Length: 240
Length: 229
Image (cartoon, rainbow over all chains, first blue to last red):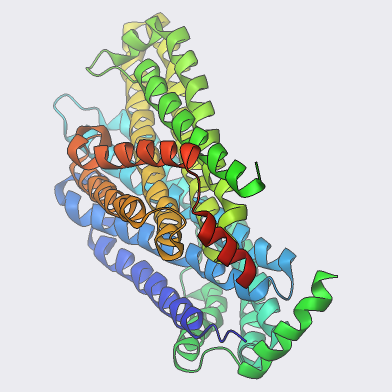
């Protein structure tokens, strides 16, 4: 029987890298984003802004690798959900991060254009409005995809008991709340993605906490050996 | 010819198609430089459209490489085999976003040439934005390429399906390409301006393509892999 110990550690580390990169992206870009002259101030802090973009890309790659590494474990139980998780958390979610990264770099272009001689801010402002709206909508649909893909992953964890059911059950409840918060955001007056812990964003907290507990659990404890043993005996049934 | 040998030949041919179609597509559909690029672009509409078609063929070949390798690599690591398909598919998706921008620029260029002078500044601003999205989407595509290619070179190196000098060369070339991507991201220059860093993967892929077509995967490794898997 394979213990997939290395897989469990890698998945835990990727969860942490993804989360830390996401937080760092926010921290690095915050002074620029929150200035009243945004986005025209971006060009003045170009490298700092691009570093923030690089963190978004790092987050995207790390989170996309999670279902990829889990695939060999889960396909023994349910190939449909295992590949669904790769599509939702790997492909579609990664595309949402790519759109965010491209939009961030477009802000840099708009800011550079504004700094050029003879620039007309009145022409650039509508472009910026469209860009900002594109980011908001993408944050929301990306989060809904994240939630749906997460439900696939944690249904698999719940069914296989590879981690204790209190942990996968917590993730399932948190995942539903996460999706609800973002659907609510679609209808909110400004169509802004919810801020974690603020208003409807309180519904994001269970998932945020669960992911970190989950990551530490995978690194420290790994997958349940008993569950892995029953998984490999079930393989034959699944194949037939 | 058994299915593994066939997969090697198909992957080798697709490597060549992806490179030839990509380079010729870029030659035809390059966005002109200079302030009057919209005027220049409107004069080359059919040439750009032909380049776009070549690009589409190239993108399909990019995905096809990972798809052709998948049934072979899955015997050693299903996750990483699927991961290489995932990232090379993302690569094609990002390239296509860039291509849509080029074709949109073509439409914009036609409006630009018939617009009165007063309206041109607004069209130019939209054009600059499209060009920015095009360059950055293409750059993200190369990032995704590096991830996808790294995964199959890593599996090649572990399994010895191809000689280690060839898979090791691939890994080094991917890392150099990744360095070119990061430089390009920070400088705003096109990735094609980092030829010394980007040329290694081009050379390695062409040697790999010929190797896969002529020699294929190591039969001893295939035989051992099938027994254990």
